[in-house]
Length: 139
Image (cartoon, rainbow, N blue to C red; front, top):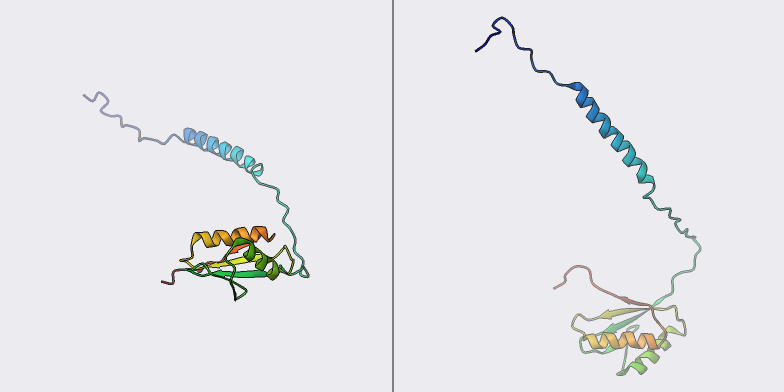
């Protein structure tokens, strides 16, 4: 039953006051949260490099084939034990303990031969080791 025959209903309106209140709360939240971003940054002092710095020390290339034979600087050696391999490495380093040993091991080389080479480098006083690898697949 419609008792108000002559009166029209008012069209629905959007309550803008509540909308503005919500926007102000979001704005305050964003303002407060952005002030904390300054405290999460780190103060880092970066090192500077000079153009006339000393060149990096050379490296000794040691190759290990699939059968466990060693070659130092492309010269095959007949070292079978760790002590003789260490003396060969010490001789190749010419007494420079800053030399880096580049290990070029065959993919089928035994783990034991690579560990033997690492132990020989430790005995020789050459603790810096680098393993060489190929990029991508070449099979």
